[in-house]
Image (cartoon, rainbow, N blue to C red; front, side, top):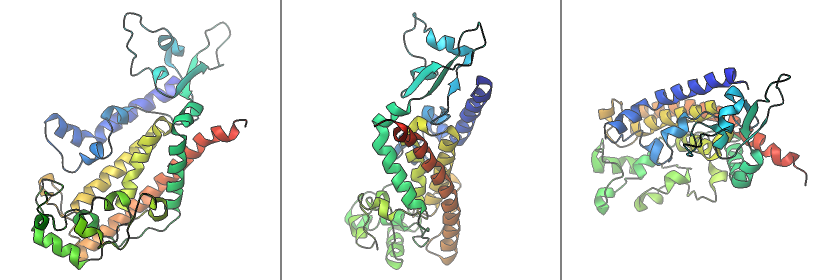
Length: 319
């Protein structure tokens, strides 16, 4: 891609990242915790700078502005690498583009070094593809009603534990426990189940483990769908920038629903509760689940293609 093609894409990506993170950044800059969006930067540890950095994805070469002259001739008075200099980024390599006019200097291109990337992240690429393919192959299940968040505080008061969030419980401790006891708990996602209270684990109809994750993950699960953002982060520069931000936007949207349907009172954030203890609330939760399942499967297919694009390097390599 020529600079006049990719530089505007990189600028637009940065602007979109800033818009998507505006609420969280405002809370951070004011020194406030954000009970809903902090999760996107703590459970999924990343920095705003990573979200703002655009990558074209594996297999795409960028012609450097000015032919790469600035990148190839570092400022000896300032030996620190320029964070915007793509030639210094991990798993990137440069080469002549081969497209110079006669008598002019050959411009440089920068691209992901897929061989180096796979040497470090090959196992991750294989696992992510296996997990996402298995998840996409299954129909979504839509009967959990977000009770995982309720199971994480079940009988906390009785056991003398502090609850997970400082927010008040919308129905109080006794009311929260009653909801868990009155509804079947059907959580298939290990990374939610592992936070259940000891009193709640036996109530779950499934007993997921890390070893069974590939066999149980399904596209109706809000947390499995939020995790697409995590997998994009794990695959780093192999993931095109638009896919990374699409996954972040989905995770952000799901997180707001996850907390709206939780036992916590999130009214201070201007959020109406999804009252999953009522028939209307259950129906609204399922409606949103189905929408997220469709969005997530579209992203899964794109992320599977990223894995395949990277893995083709190994397939083409001589044995």
